[in-house]
Picture 1 (cartoon, helix red, strand yellow):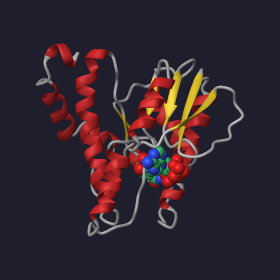
Picture 2 (picture 1 turned 120 degrees about the vertical axis):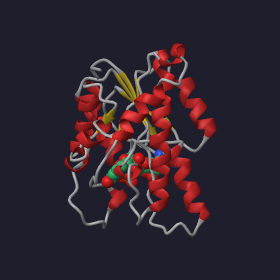
Picture 3 (picture 1 turned 90 degrees about the vertical axis):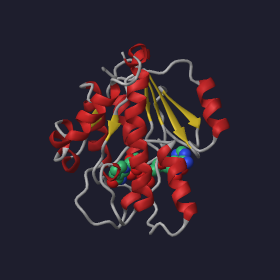
Picture 4 (picture 1 turned 135 degrees about the vertical axis):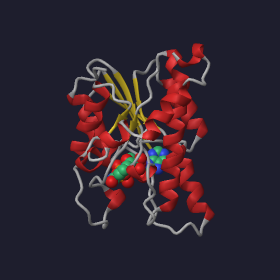
Length: 220
Ligand SMILES: NC(=O)c1ccc[n+]([C@@H]2O[C@H](COP(=O)([O-])OP(=O)(O)OC[C@H]3O[C@@H](n4cnc5c(N)ncnc54)[C@H](OP(=O)(O)O)[C@@H]3O)[C@@H](O)[C@H]2O)c1
């Protein structure tokens, strides 16, 4: 898929990877970029329209859907990561509300990062949902891609001292993967290290096998 002249909506677009995705979409010639934000957003480019969009707020989601006439690409980027030990159900609930019903994925969705278990389980659930959505929406010509990110240098993992890619590099990798129609997109050096293993692995094979259970009319 070529991003040029496309209409794109990005959630969590005010900072971090979301903001870098807005810039990268504009750089690639997107026709219109809807920037989902919870507060104010200053971007001079006339192609950007801010949308009040808390991904846990159903009425804001409905309003956004009404405001956007047609959409080519939706990037569910908004996310939270709170350090926890699974002792507080509210923290688990908050992660599920944003990251599961929200969704841009993480390597923690494939294997849990035990310092942020609530985050990891929300991303695992989101990844699993992505696989089912992919099978169900194929009939409507909608492709569903999972972005599997390694560590990126944003507010989210400030203080977690591991090598990190820049948000700009992550945004480029995400759109590169989308333009190559990759079902799973591994946009940074750490995630790229598991890309071949994932694509040729048992779990991906099982996803393809299970897809056959979706009635043909809905699967293709
Ligand atoms: N950074 C990493 O290493 C890394 C690795 C793997 C995956 N990811 C995923 O990449 C995505 C972006 O992460 P990031 O690193 O850019 O994080 P970030 O810098 O912490 O930014 C998070 C963004 O999500 C928004 N957000 C949070 N809760 C929201 C809600 N309820 N509704 C709407 N927007 C909400 C924030 O908006 P406010 O400014 O209003 O809070 C902010 O724009 C997340 O899904 C994250 O899980 C990141």
